Length: 152
Image (cartoon, rainbow, N blue to C red; front, side, top):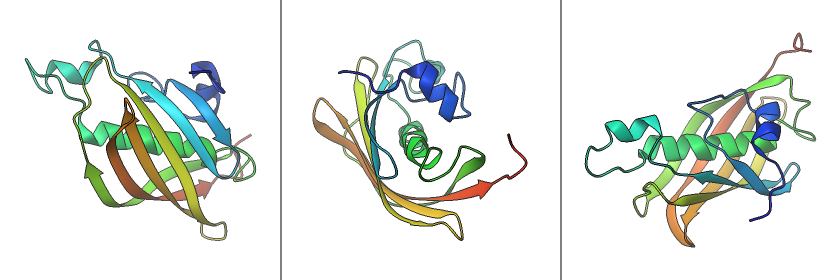
């Protein structure tokens, strides 16, 4: 899959760092609208020592976090913001896990902006993540943008 943004570029947008940075590369990006990103699942990630011994499965909450970070790539760039704000979860609805995600899988995450109320900093996005073309998880996300005018 060709890369639109590599890990270094992603770290220029998102504040997350190892071990919680859960986006490896971006393969499609439409500013202010949508993003498709990839998370390569590897056995040497820290969560697999305890989730679960003998049967490693990516925790559902980390799949959702990876999708939220993917959505942040839309919200923390022009035309949505100049990168001076913070991006937080405000709600999650209609989440369904469809299949387990395990080491060796490549999670392809698509986040689409449905609405943004700039005055209140509230955005709604829908997301789906796939492994091998099969739907693994989907849901509707609500985020809050907090703009800090003092950041440079």
